[in-house]
Length: 352
Image 1 (cartoon, one colour):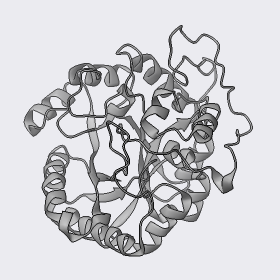
Image 2 (image 1 turned 180 degrees about the vertical axis):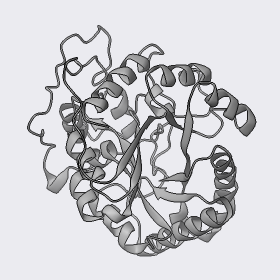
Image 3 (image 1 turned 90 degrees about the vertical axis):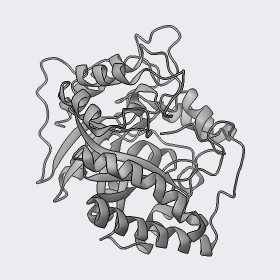
């Protein structure tokens, strides 16, 4: 989601990542010369194959995000212009998008509504970063940013605010800026701050707060995700489960959905390349450089397998957004669209 960096993911139970039976091999035939690892073309499903039907009562609304076009910052010369993103995300077959970093897309609601509307696009959520573990002293500055994003999110008719915890490394330099582990007091600050944020955002803007576990933040592994859920009120704080980040940090998305399904309010669909992840863990690579190595890869070549994730989510008694978010910063401008088109076809083959 951003160029923040860290010392690397935590493998499950100290083990190297394991491929899931049926994973597509890391070597993908047909990858263009110069493709970043994990971002090469992937053979699509057979044209004659009928999409599988997802079981259960829930409905998934599939979309994509600026992140899948390599967008991590409001303004960066490495990123595609926002008009090109909107054109291409619609061309790829998506109807829902996220706002991405505040300021990348137009922040005037009327202009953004016109730009999205004429392309047949709708907004599912806005995104903010928050360092609420630092206590009440950061509340005012946090709220000023949250209010900006929440106002635009509401104006666009969306219902969710995705909250990503602050990184403990600088998002440009990967320099360590604080401890990767929270003290008991910091956990209390984090839980209380997120509940306050959830209450204020709901009461003032009518949005639901969903917290996004993310590599190189304090909410990353299964242990920390469960600790957060157990420490917060489900009426105020729920989860944006990012399948790629959760796998990067050793978590099992299907198990989390089956165990804490009532707390899953939103999905980000993403996969990690298990071979690249093993290298990242071995070498202690920060998250930003890991992305540049291609650790987040195009489905269906990575883990977790998305079919069982989608099936588990569909069994929940809830309508959920399932937004594709393939971290690719930086990437050549012509790379995202073909990947987005293939990913949309793959998800349709899964019934989504």
